[in-house]
Length: 286
Image (tube, rainbow, N blue to C red):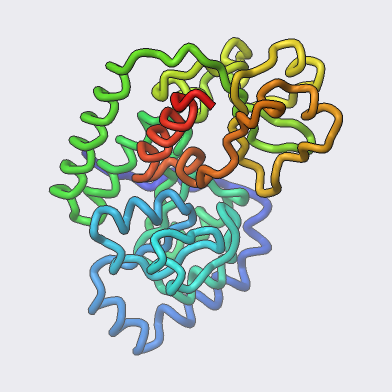
């Protein structure tokens, strides 16, 4: 499998990056920088918490030199310098780390990829929207980081887990997977959350809506009455709100808000533990 950085993109946003490019040239052509570049084969900055997890899982955490503010697992990741937000880093901070490669799911400002490519830094955009993407990412990072054996082992684990879940009988229960609460945003057909619920043997209440994520009305949810609610927003479900009080799932305590949202929202090595946790919680007959 060959890896190719994305094609250079033209953008008016480049003009704002020129000071950073000047800084990069100063850093890259100092004696210290030249010496360090020769001594380190691969220096990676990860702009995605999922990619950071995968790199550590493949045994290549020592190749990482930078992360984002939300790359918080494993705990060793916190020791790395942060270059800014998820998909929205500060170019100057990346440059100071002198990476040979930058990996991301997406970038808010595509001009950053162009600027880094101009400086000789390979930029790899690795989408992470479906479970199939996870397998592609593992294979690609295995090649990039010379961790092919570890990648093959992980892909075998994924295949076994998928086979296991697909053989399990359905639980014949429905769930509303809440992404955000104000406005109310839920997972529909084709979303990663939709796939996760299906593998857990649970019907996605919004699985017939042909949008991966969409805003829905209170009336829509009240009419459908899910058996369970999977709650992933950062704040607790407001049980005192008149709308939530009307749902039988809330009345009977069938709100799953204690599962670590990273296990069921982040496409990383722990995703199958999240699926297992969902199935166990909903299969317990709460």
